[in-house]
Image (cartoon, rainbow, N blue to C red; front, side, top):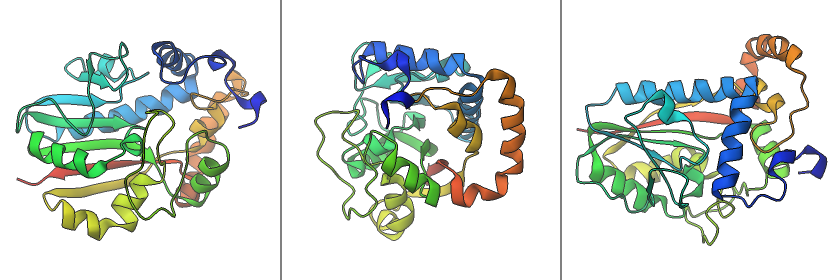
Length: 255
């Protein structure tokens, strides 16, 4: 990403540090277009929670999230110290069998270096009918172009395996992972984890998120233009299959 496009408040801040996540939360709250996007994402995740039987709600990779403000019962977690209520690795969930109602993740799945271990833990800890609900990087033509060329994390859709080496939980990832697992290799996923049913892979509105700058890029849109871009998003809805940057994925544990 060109230096002039980077969010000035994040310069010199260590990625993944408590300060980094606090600034991300501040950026989201201060930009109406990006806040609107996150409100929509969290509403979708919490709708999935309401479709599941009672149990504990776990948010993985909470980081700069404000989901707990919308659902106080959620248990927040991250692999980084001092940014959430608990330090939790998705590959080893510290919960009893059949105790979780939902596992929620926003921009987290592609950071898990061994997703088979995560799925096994989800199968163990979710109540029958419980859900994994996530917002993840999509695989549209524009998403492939954007994340390959203008994002600091790798987008490697030609990799054959799902796993990758990880020494840095923020940088060592593969943003193409959800497409690889749930679309390209869906039959393999269903064979390995037959109790997990993919119920939804829904492309998200994209235009206002893109022009907002997200949480790492500079915002170059004057606020007085926001209503125009919101209206434009509705007009551009038919282009979702070409341009969406993220999708909402829901997976349910069969009873």
